[in-house]
Image: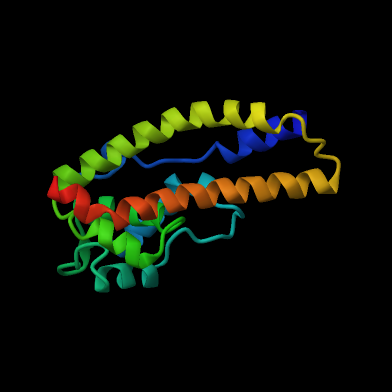
Length: 178
């Protein structure tokens, strides 16, 4: 049980960058990379991992996942869009991310959605460890078969949640028509 609690603390201890934490001025690419690397470093699995690269940002802009850059500086809207893309791409295909982001073209709506998502995430961050502890506490994590069972169950839960996102996207037209 102690090992499970330790893993839960580690898994649910990530970093978020809130809209109010973003500078009120446009940033160059290197400034964005420095900001994200510093503020979101807790989200790295390994210290040497890169959360985002220049190439990734350029590709997101070319694919219209974020608005194309004008000049060499990125606006707050583009930074918010980038934060959304970085979050969504952990679970969804870039095609699905693009479908979600294509209508997110103004700072007010992106900022509101992103802020609300962080509130929901904070709520889930409190509730999910309790649920997981309750459901997984019978496992003996010193046994390989129980660790495998836990990994399989968690992977399945992740698949259920990804499918829920995909189902929402697949039914987007139905929602828009109501």
